[in-house]
Figure 1 (tube, rainbow, N blue to C red):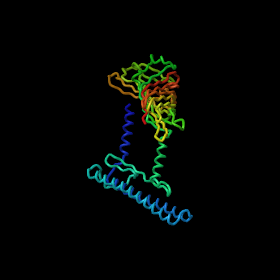
Figure 2 (spheres, rainbow, N blue to C red):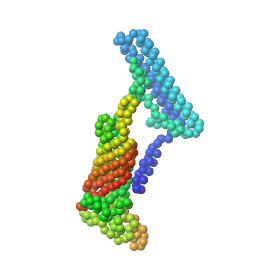
Figure 3 (cartoon, rainbow, N blue to C red):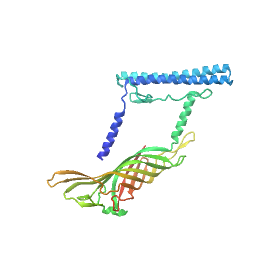
Figure 4 (cartoon, rainbow, N blue to C red):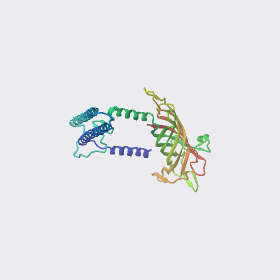
Length: 374
């Protein structure tokens, strides 16, 4: 558990350190550059339209009078576009100056421009702009029409996307079954509630049909930390090709066998979330909004095994000992798993089909709570 927390802390720290500090000068340079981009794109678009009008005039498709009228029309349109877009940038510049006056944004002697020129921050608010859209040609709806059509197309793509991704975290308890007998839990040599497991990973969820449905295949990758604590004053001892459980000579306060494993799970998921119907009649599926059932399995391999012992020696001195060995555990591991839950939370069960230790019929079983976070 300490290692899991350390990984999460390091991950969060890395993200925090990677964030570039916003300064007044950098934001002013970004605004200036965006104004240049706006002006250049609108002028280039106007030039293309004028050339297109001249070609139509040469082919005899339009008269000289019509040609002159169209050129005036497109020139006026792009002048309005420049005025509107530049005015928005000037408004943001005024807000930036106001935040600088109020001490909400720092100054810097550096004038470097960040890689993300289309991101602009004022106080705690971040604005993002996209000036890459081309204007419509003459005879169409113009730039506004193009933008509307592109936005509608992009919206439909988002509506109908077949694959989503989730961050997965599982924690619970595990034990072993002997010879696939569930009743063997009653005589297990391991503590049930003290033998914990943790799983951390990332999954993708893909709809099986092109149209909205409730059936998906869910697949991904995860890391598993599996702990088994023995009852009594006993430890695992490797004896050739066999791993045996023996009584320890000193008083044990901790006897824990842990292995770390990388898993590749695959589940067939039935998600009962109701589909969404839009005002235009378009239908899209929604996930993780209702009851979910997943059935499947996993394939994994062990990354390392350790045994942790804590005891007092003959002089009553506290000793913490870590033994590095595979303890005859099978390196490749596979099994079946399933989960049933509501929205992002579900009950999770996992059972190994191959034995935990070589030359035994001991198989690991795990029960826990699973979180699938979009």
